[in-house]
Length: 467
Ligand code: 5AD
Image (cartoon, rainbow, N blue to C red; front, top):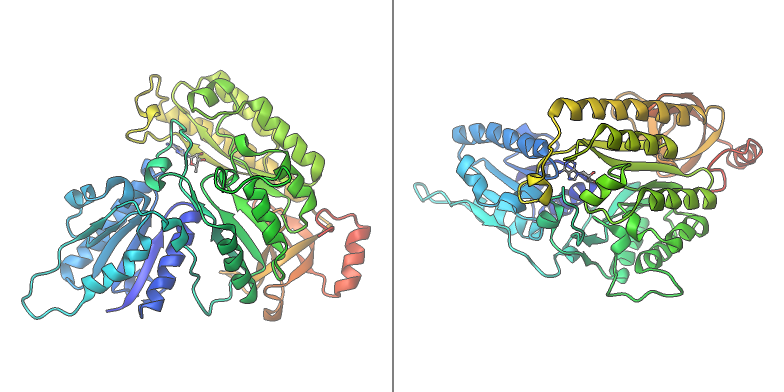
């Protein structure tokens, strides 16, 4: 009765939360399994950003509830953003759910499962559902455990929770609460521990990482707390690459641009949410920057690091978005030349200011705009990848591909790369000569004679060869 399966919806933050819960459960004697049908307990870690994400998790839970009716010892629960957002109301629709745990109470899951699975004498009443969506001061510091004995070449590290912005479309401030950062020393200790276990790349996570520590940690030599944190992580032996997600254009200042130039481990890839290419839409979304400011950040990053890669989030069909607004988005999308993008069709979230705005955009228009941007993205991404043909790229070897016999890893620009390798190279940085490129992936051959290949890479003037 102690086999647990966790299914995660949504962002990397959710993935990291699921992992922390899994590691706490393992410490308590539970066993994590890879398949839902092998589990005695299934937990869904949910996302509320769009209605579709909520509907998927609700549909899945309906299916699990049918199994529970046949097998009353089967335990099912919701965790995370939708649990926080909807709480006990979920039980009206899904009365069989045993557990609903919000975003600040993940670390109580082992206790709750203990009590739900405690041996009961025959005929004793079935325990009633547990709902816990309380706020808890300091809960950001509880997301620090990683699963033991699992070599993780690339790891997520949560540096803060919550969001103090007030984007008119967004539910996250409600599901994740106010901003709370973890102390620098604790984050550094966690990353040192990961490095000691073989982690080579960390991705720092927060809803708005550029707000990390503001108002708590003073600026030093003109450097924000976030840049101070990046410097500390850059100094950790064994860590070879640093990434982070997501910054906010408003907090993306000269110190952060300079960090890309000065910190060799900070990869030349940034995910910088744009949302719209129209100033009018940005105002209506309550995004406090202009397209001019966004393009300035892009230009200064390109000045600092010529082969920078850009990724973004875009919402199409926000209320009131006209053809002209959308054309502006297309133009900025092409001007920046995004290599990667998450394109979302606007989804009404209850209780947000945009929910009641006039001029909601019809679904068909949203769909058409979505397709248009996806096709632009495909072209841009493919041509950036094709520009790498014949170059040597530094790849961090992550492991065997899920399908097939070859290995995969990512370039510093975060491009998925496929190549032949051996187990002993897992966790190593290796030069790969790029021979084939599609919009989503690179294919190439490992160059094994280390020193030789670095020289070759330098001669070929390969992007990324400075690292
Ligand atoms: N509808 C569509 N997309 C949304 N996002 C946030 N809220 C909504 C919404 N109501 C997108 C934004 C954000 C990303 C995480 O999700 O682009 O950056």
